[in-house]
Figure 1 (tube, one colour):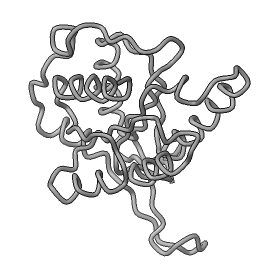
Figure 2: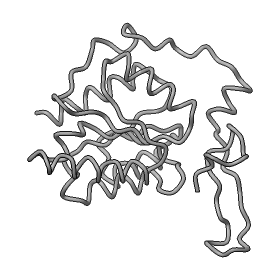
Figure 3: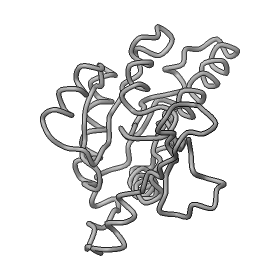
Length: 197
């Protein structure tokens, strides 16, 4: 469950029921690892500007990037990167919220005689989020004919070949590690160019 609106504080992204949906279920707080690391080990994060991310990126008219990210720190870094690239975006805080936003955008597109892909150029998703994780969101997008042609980039602090293999299995178009602005921008450009070809 999302932790926003609770007294859990800025370091908690969600609350998990350990014993299912029973009333007496034990609860566990899921911590925002990115925020904790930023607080404990401050680093000189690479400055995010036009020089770092390259020239402005032009999306098809009327389209945007939909982002699913539960960490406030990661959301702010993503926003800086997308703003530096001159890209319109919609920020959501979970896979479930992003999935609902895609449905809403599909409905808007239909009313205008368009497809969802005319409104959504790309989906950028974290992996570990409350309500619906990035793997499930990606699988849902790729298995639904209304959205299957929308590219999905998984943006995560989870690294390793196991996660990257799983990313490929669920149908994501690319994977990029968090907090690497040059690679972030290059990956988005590459995936969008491939989708346009």
